[in-house]
Structure formats: C-alpha cells, structure tokens
Image 1 (cartoon, rainbow over the protein chains, first blue to last red):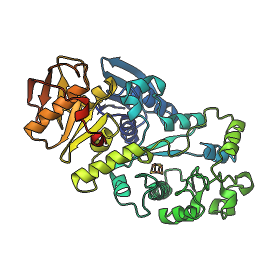
Image 2: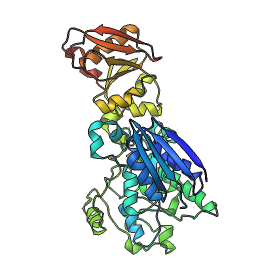
Image 3: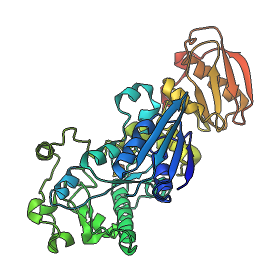
Image 4: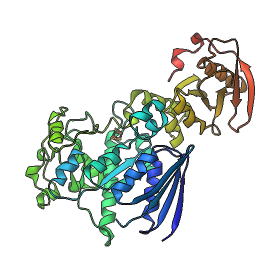
Length: 76
Length: 337
Ligand code: SF4
C-alpha cells in the first residue's frame, strides 16, 4: 500500500481522467492516488470514472481554483 | 449505447472504449464556456457507460490521430472530418487492444468488437460498401459486429459460431432514427445520447474553416494540441497572413486563454472591461499595436477616445499604453475566420 500523487493542473477534461486511469492501471489494490486538478469538470468525471471502474473516492476538496481528489485503488 | 444494450440482452459482457482525438466537443468546451457550465458538465461517454453498467477505457489518441486528420486516405466528409479513416483507425485500435488482451493470459480476453453504426445513417462513412471496408482495413475483419444493422450484413464470426444469436440483432438502415428511438424506449434508455458526429468539431463548418486557415497561414498542414484547442474558443480575426487575433467572448474563455499568455502575444484591457486577446503569429511592433486597437474595439471602451491596455509579448514582457479603438468599419468582414 502506497500513496501516489498525480498533478493534472492546467489540463482540461478528459485529460485528467485519462491520466488518472493510466496512473491507476499501474497501481495495486489498496494504494491511494491523490489527483490535483484545476478543471471543475473533474469533480464530476473522476468520481463517475471511479464508480464505473470500481475504485473508491475517499475525499474531494476544492480550494479556490484547485481541486484535490483522493482515490483508493480497488481490486477490479 | 443502443448497440451495447442489444448485446447485453444476449448475456454478453461488454466493456467500452472511448477515444480522445483532441477534436471532441465534450468536456473542453463545456468546461471553458461559462454559459455551458451549468448545462452539462458531465462527460458523455462516462455517463453512457454508467447507464449501461459497463467499464470504460478512455484512450488518448490525439498524437496518432494527427495523421488521420492531415492525410486521410479516403478523404474528408462535408468539412474537414475524415470519418471513414477515423473509423478504420478507431476500430483498428480497439482490435489491437482486443488482441493484446487475448495474448495476456492473466487478463480476460474479449472476443469481438461492436459499433453502433447503422447503414445509411451517415452519407459517407456509413454506407453499405464502407462497412466491409472498415472491417477489413482495421484488421478486425469478421470480429466486427454492428448489432443495429447486422441482419442486412453478412454473418460475422460471432454469429456463425453461435456466440451471438443473429435473430436477436437488428436491420436498421437509413436516416430515420425512429425505430432506434423506439427500441431505446423499450430498453428504458431515457436520455438517448446524440448519435456520433454531433460530438466532433471536425464536422463543424466554422471550426473546419479555422483549421484550414491555420494550415494556410502556416504554409503546411500540421497542428499541435494547443492549436486545435484554441480554435474552439473566441473570435478569430486575421488582419494579415502572418498574424491573427483570438478575442475571448466571455469570462470562461478569458480564464482558459490566460493559460496561453506565455506562448502568445496578448492584449489585456486596463481602463475598461473587455476580453483578453491573444495574438498568434509574428506581428511587427506596429501590427501588435494595431491588434491592440482591434482588441479595444471589443471592449466597453469601444467608443472612447483612448483606452489603456497592457500588451504582453510572447516572452512575458509587458508594457502599458493608451490606444484608440479602431472603428467597426476598419475590421474588414473578410478578416473574420
Ligand atoms: S465525426 Fe466521428 S467518425 Fe467523423 S471524424 Fe469525427 S469522431 Fe471521427
């Protein structure tokens, strides 16, 4: 189990989602990935992507224009 | 969407692949333009996958896709949309993924590909003759099934092998979407998504014009992802072959374009409210000044004697000065791309 970070600031959807997907492909179940982003679209798209693919959103927060989403990688 | 449901009906596990070409209308435009933000922030492919209960793989093909847009073997559609090549490419990609998954023993293999194509629905890329062409050129051959019109096409491998019951596939054809909508209702698919085509900027006339203009100005057919993103926003005005202005139309575009200030010259209004303008190309100092006067025309100070602007050059060096907005007649209609 390990913590990982992914910086997608400045990118527009769907790029943050694609990068999240590609990062998670390399991770193990139990790992946690923290994604930072600036496109508000991720607030919708990343949780949707997680629901579809069976991963868990632990937390999402927004401060000014910066968004942070923590995802637990699950067995899928 | 419908094609997936038809196959799921037969108890078959389906997963989706969505390709990001750079020209997708999705996401970006909704994210950029403020007025669209309320409307629909969702990513359509993700939404559809969730409705159908399938997994979705999103693949970034924007780099490889360039070759399709720049040199389509089968030419363009009504605008700069290389639909036929695009489909061959996408099905080919999906086929490569299928083969790879099959080779990796520990991954579950997939047996065939489905697309939602309907014969006759699109003038160029969905004709009866093009169906076998896409199957052949993509390498998917008879592992490519079109559940919505399979009955009017020769049986494919999954049908011959009995993995799929051909009788439960459909024979839709032509532009009339009523039978499809009726079937969608039968499946309880309420918000039946737009058919392919409405989601790609290359089928848009004004977008294609801007892309053609870009190629002409560069003297060659090529683009970077940033170029094609910027074609989606703002008014584009070209006073001379070697430079053009991109004038933002609203706040969302302003924010988006601010991210490009280091890569382009820019004009920002100081004394009056007004849009951010990027200047693409190699204008002389005098021309940059003229660009600032055009930009001022789109500000709230359009009728003022003089407005204060900040002109920033590509490197980030800025200077503040006063300029007189040009008159509306000074902007020739032919400058608007
Ligand atoms: S409209 Fe669809 S098939 Fe045609 S070029 Fe765009 S994405 Fe490809």
